[in-house]
Amino acid sequence: MARLLVNRLLQSLLVLLAVSFIVYMLIGLMPGDPIDLMIAANPELTSADAARLKALYGLDKPLVGRWWNWLTALLQGDLGYSRLYAQPVGRILLPRLMNTLVLLLPALLIAMAVAVPLGVLAARRPGGKLDTAVGLFCFAGISMPPFWLALLLIMLFAVGLGWLPAGGMETIGGGGFLDRARYAVLPVATLVLLSVGGYIRYVRAAMLEALRQDHVRTARAKGAGEARVVWGHALRNAMLPVVTILALEFGTLFGGALVTETMFAHLGMGKLIYDGIMGNDFNVALSGLLLVTLTVLAGSFLADLVYALLDPRVSFQEAR
Image (cartoon, rainbow, N blue to C red):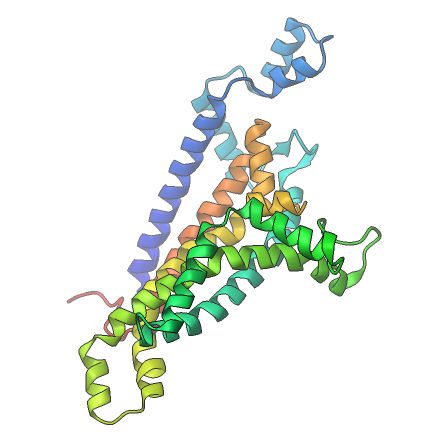
């Protein structure tokens, strides 16, 4: 077990190093740098001023050298300074991360709470009326564009009925937990409707495979009740591939949902990373993308541990 932890840690560090290098190179190859953008915004800056500023911020060095300087500063706990937001990156990431979790974590929990029972019920009688209805629901959810669904919900519940706010995060001046919850209802509902169809399909497919296994037929032959067979025996094995999907979605929790956050004016990680890339703000973009990569790796490791809990045949003990 200890060797596994060390190996996974080393692999994760190598992945983070490679991702930081590739992203830094790609952003650096984009036309224009922060100094060029400053010159475009202020015609009074001369070429001598531009050269002096580039030397001051290290932008006159090759991309590899600039990436190395950024990496050494990161290892010392310095995420850098954001040009777009005029403050240290560390002060920006945490509030945006919390804003994203307020939306995506409830959306994930609600979607799974709906997907598991519907997927199981649909798999029990494939081709039946319930299975057909669930399939149509999944198809509709997967097919809807996020911006279109967000607009429909805004027009219905905010403009038409006036029950919920159309966008933003809280009432001006602050209104407490319930006030913020009202502003989160529509974006969370959008994310749930967009994702639950895919989860249902994964659960249904996994359950169909699990119900064909020998141990399930054996349990039925021994006289076990249908509820115990389905929920106690088949579902446990069916959750293995679903755990893999959840592990991948774990990174999405921290990466944000750009379209939904934009439609509802919610300041989350997705909008932050997008603005950092489009504004050539290296420090913001890199820090955000590395955080997403780190959480994906952490989710993959947690999935391995859950496999061992769900399936006794999975073991991390070294072969002797």
